[in-house]
Image (cartoon, rainbow, N blue to C red; front, side, top):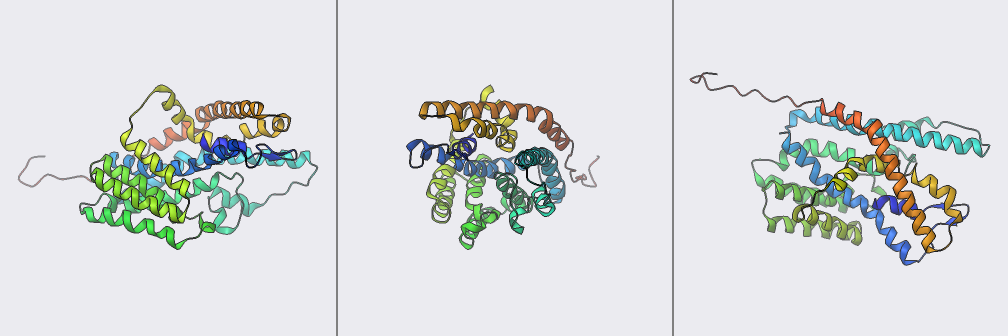
Length: 324
């Protein structure tokens, strides 16, 4: 929802910019782009926690990646097709010749666009590319994160975040640039399963927050720390938050199609702060409703297909002197 608000308030068309530059409202809505950092911390916590509950082992790496692809890629590809149809329609409306940039299409599909200087069809896809790089990393690193030798867990959360110091902002399409933010979520996971204590957790959070503050953004560090503290120390659960969670991935994928179209066609007619706030609210609501339909029709089957893939356990044989 933070990312939605950020994108909608930064809407721009031939009539100009939706929110006036320098306004307090524009600044508050600008903070919405830190929803990405919230998302990365949650992933740093949720993915290893799910692997832990599933008793993940390194031999499951291929199945883990396959499950993630089946869970997330079909809805992503369908959303990409929606944006493709929308782009073709705008080209046709403007009387331009329609051309197909196959390298761009291919690298968007593979989530490798920025590694080959191609543009995304939708800006939000860069975070999904980071997420899949993280899946590959955690599939290989989880045995160290959950090693019997706890010093390996400590070293992982200390050394891996330092990779952000080796990368510049123009390399933010690489997972390791965001490693301190993910590591904050991983620290919350280790505390949740009681592999570290609260003092160690807060030390990890402070360490990675400093790296985030120095190498990424000060505001990003604030939102990352706040997210981790909420995960660990706040407990709330109700039907509304469950429902929003159920449609959140579809909302992430499609808000640029649903709400942004409303902004495109009506934003130029809004005058005054009240009208703009009402339009912004309407765009968010429409995006959520569209995401709910998309989640039911498209994302739901992908989730069920992913759940059908089970990890095969090692068979533990009883000692010879015991009966089976």
